[in-house]
Structure formats: structure tokens, C-alpha cells
Amino acid sequence: LREMTVEERAAGLADGAARWFSGNRADHGKNVTELSRVTGFSEPVVAAGLDRLFGAATAPEILKWWKRRDRPVSAVRSVLIVSAGNIPGVSLFPAMGCLLAGVPVMIKSATAEPVSAPLWLDQLRDAAPRLAESVICTTWPGGDRAIEDVLFDGVDRIMVYGRDETVEDLAKRCAGKVSGYGTGISFAVIGDAAEHDARAARLLALDMALWD
Image 1 (cartoon, rainbow, N blue to C red):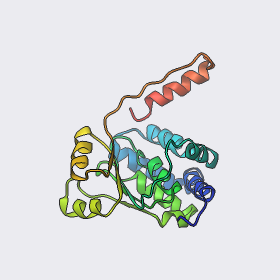
Image 2: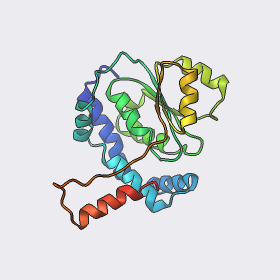
Image 3: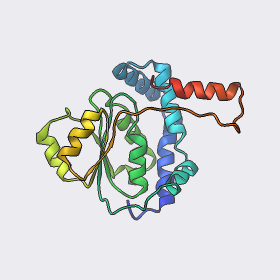
Image 4: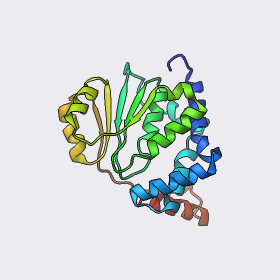
């Protein structure tokens, strides 16, 4: 993985995301239906949400994101992402960031949403197998100490998305390893320079409505 340049990694990640739009349409429909079934979101919401997610992962945007990082890449050798179940695909951009930095990553999907991470990995295997070799997608019942004690001890960094109590519990169990992303609030600001037209209103409404 680290033998690839950042530009090569970004191109591979973008190609993987683009497979959402260019892949088999029957599989596309099945994935939307399955994600709708397990999450309770309607199929139009799932389709729109994944379109926005994968559509944002172009090579130029990924490289802009990389250049905006506020700290140098550390000597982390492996990362585990513990994903939340309420927002489909919440682990994917963090996982892309790990690969962009040349760091292998494991994604632990929530039992309530085990679809989006394997879907992305399948796309990545098809488009950029060298990157996909550095990703593992799995799941297990949260709190299974027989599994977690071994895995948590074997990684350098754990990124936790979920309820505050989940973040706090893992931070206590894995002191110094956990970056937590618990309950948050989102808001939008429309600046004076924005065009206050129907298109801006539609885009803002879509941002507010997705996964709600």
C-alpha cells in the first residue's frame, strides 16, 4: 500500500466510488433494497444518500481533502473503525482517509447496518485491488470481549462512531487509542455570497432531509 503514491491511491479510491454509478444496475437495485430493508430508510432516500456519498469521492476532491489535513500523517500502522448503525456509509470516508495515508483499515459494521461497507469494498476490489487488499470488513455483536480484547490490542488506533456511552466505554477499555465521534448536531449557514435561488434551496433541503 505504501509503495503507491498518494495520487495513485486517490485515483483508485475515486474509481472504486465511481463503480456505484457504472456497475451492474441489477446489483445496484438489490443493494438499495437491502439497505432500505435493514435501516428502515426508504429506497429513494438510500439511493440519493449513496449517490451523494460516492459522487463526492472524485480524485480531485479526495486530493483537496488530503491537502487540507491539519496534522502530519503519524506512524500509525493499522486502524479499526467501529461504525454506527444510524447513518449508512458513515465509516467509508474515514476508511478512505486511512488508505490515502497508506494505513490498512478494518471496518466493524454495526449489526443494524452491515451492508454499506462490504458494498464499498466490493466496488474497490473491482476498481483498485491493490487498495482493497488493505481493507477488511466484518461485524460481530458489540461487547463480545473474546473478540474485542484481541482485536483492540492488535491495532494502533480505533475510530468509534456511535452513541456517547459506546465511545466512553471503548475509550476506557483502550486508553490512548480511541478517537471518538459520538452524538453531534449539524447546522447550515447560507452566506451573503451565496445565490439565494431555487437551486440553493433544493440542495439545502436535500442535505437536511438525507438520513432523517
